[in-house]
Amino acid sequence: MAGGPEALSDAELLALLIGSGTTKQTAVDLASSILKSVSGDLEALSRCPVRRLAKFPGIGDAKAVNILVALELSNRYRQLPIAFQSKSKLNVVLLLKC
Image (tube, rainbow, N blue to C red; front, side, top):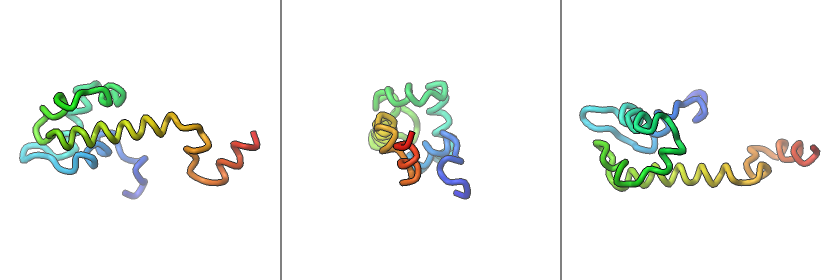
């Protein structure tokens, strides 16, 4: 991953969570199908019931739960105060000086 995770598309990130595809679809193709079903809306995806996600070929309950757990962690992270989201001490110092 030359550009790091931020360089990956939503489908590629979701494919990494899924881990593997099926004999007919790669993990990226499967992830793209899932995203297409919610019009690419990650918020809508986070509200999908496990049963709905598990209906996609290659996605069972365990993978569906993994997807929803990752989205929930992301949601919780976004709700943290900015100082806790900072990637470096310098950003925290600059934030505190404002």
